Image (cartoon, rainbow, N blue to C red; front, side, top):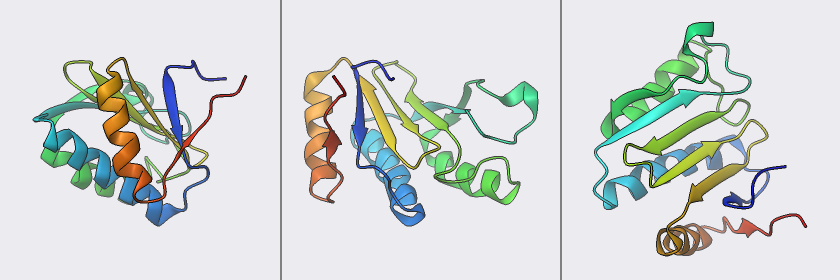
Length: 131
């Protein structure tokens, strides 16, 4: 079970929605002035072992081409493997989960509320935490 500070969005998302969520996360960060992020392969990825769970620093603008290239290489499969994306300040993190869910973590309640509102307009609603 995930810690309660992670916000889970709509489960499960189909592949296209999952890609839309990745694009939206990149846009969300761009709107908040984030220009560099850490990205890491997670559970299920077939990347080289040395790359698994290792934060890679990259410009935010490179995230979508990176996702496309890693899919082409069959290192990461959208909605089937975990991919972590976090801003370099550590203010927040998205995890695109292997069961087609998306998790968002932040201590900034205003930032969380903003994402919930934006994604809610797309029908991606947070799932109440399990008790």
